[in-house]
Length: 329
Image 1 (cartoon, rainbow, N blue to C red):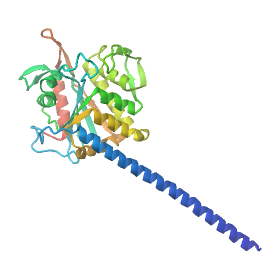
Image 2: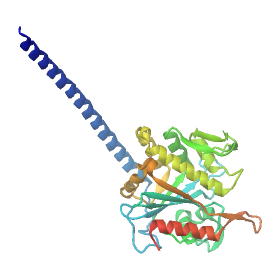
Image 3: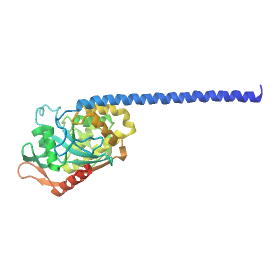
Image 4: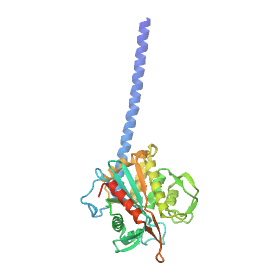
């Protein structure tokens, strides 16, 4: 056999080997692509089912402060987040009036892909339209649940509430656990009750650390060593940490657990078709611009009940910032 024949045989073998490798690589890519599509379809169906079950028709097409209804796919919108403690684990509290333990108003700007979050102190002394009198803002839910709370916040800020998410503590704990914890800075050592209302069940030391669901909830609830303003800031930091962790590549395979946790413990007037428009904010990850806002104030106790009196200038500044972010006059 001549040298030319030998070279041709070697070249044919190399060519066959290359084709086999190329075919193998193409097969692997195809399988991975199909797996991703299958998982994405699974998540879509699960999210559709979970969030559709969480939807409740509040009988209102738009806020009274809007001239026309909004579409979150093209409009800037506001979302009121209500954290409620329904005390399902405490037999003594079952049947008692439920109040909001956390109130946060988020405005979303489509053009800048930014979010502004305002924490409203739970003891804020405000006018509650439902009773035509002043009281703590977290009492509004006890007087008329979701709608009474929305009307109270709209009256306070003169800003339309387009959507609301009412979430109980179980959702908070389960979401954080589904993400295998979140990294948050704990400002000081403290003891706090857990979601089952067991006193001093949670003990945290100061410093940046990864918290599980119960620990994150304890940090979000405690105010033993400071006040409602600092408590609101901690809640905003934890929410930012959840969004950041959710957007990370390592959390993608945990989305089904997150969806289940939220869907089982939330009610909202936002349909799933509308909710899909919010995914662009979450997927922005570290690039998402989230600004935390607070309203200053001072202790106010005209009688036996303690209140937080909001500072008018600080309140007006927050209102102006949110209106500008929504592009409304």
